[in-house]
Image (cartoon, rainbow, N blue to C red; front, side):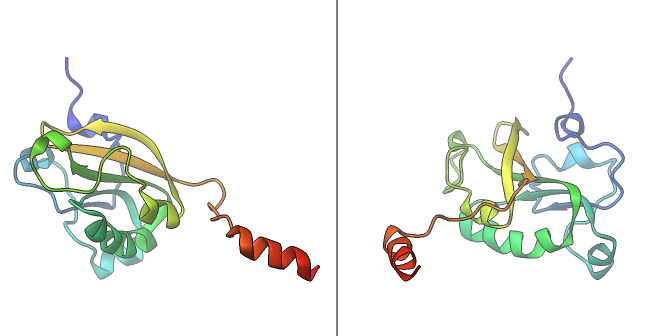
Length: 147
């Protein structure tokens, strides 16, 4: 028996659910689920327990992250769905892209599931410690000389 989509996404009893940008091709999978399609003032105040956002490129994803991450509970589940390379949807997102906008927001990739023949979703968890970018060598040398 195939796992249904909600089981794949580990959606259990979360109350405040956001599914943003849901394509009509898989909308019927979520028909019995109560969810918000966009961030509302009420959702901001209650905080999001579960977020599944659909993005087709990194620019769109960056804008979504700016809206969603501040509203997400620390222990909330955060999934990003992107088109498979075989989908014929033009995208710069894939399993091996940098995901820098997500990592800069304090998240790291955890697991990936296929939603259908077009979409894949990756779950991101909050990073244990903030990921710091290494300082360029020239700046480190100047800092070392100053000591």
